[in-house]
Length: 229
Image (cartoon, rainbow, N blue to C red; front, top):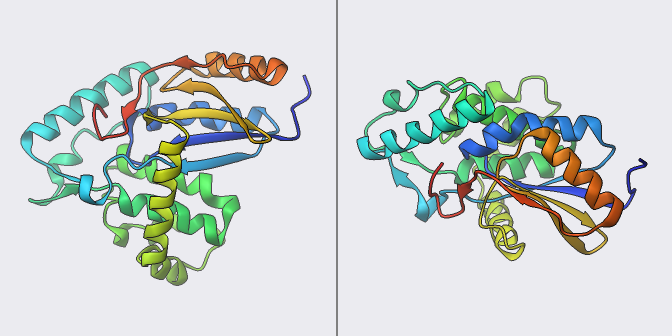
């Protein structure tokens, strides 16, 4: 089947969303198997005022869901990472989102790669991506000026750009992450709301491209308000 040249895959997610990390291999395969452009919309899981301090209760809550994601998706998790955080550490997703939109403004062809790197750094490698000081090594091999990137990622402009993405996600009616949509012209059709295995999403994508009818399915996801994740 020939891909629709006017179609764009719209992926709504958050680098610190555990079900998005579980969904990462599906997104990578969709990108590699289909000749479709991909547009990321940052969802805003726990940004800024919604950030939560890491209490023992929150740590147990998160690890429970990480175990669930690992079991369903097979993705690796460093379960010791949270216990190494300093007292008062806050689960704040604003800076990673700002990093993604910063890459979008500088090198849009590397945006998805940085999104994946941030996910792997946080979940598999136990790196504190809330702290922008951890970012320079994550830019290795990407054709971007690191000093310029670090200046921009801390700017009010990039923070506002990230919040514009959060607002767009809500306008799209997205209530949890990951959410995958297909846009053709000015119309959107749902592919999957939540985690789904690749074969299921691929089948839905073909169906939507063939008919452009809403045939999306729901799966496991992180709630937009920072709920189960």
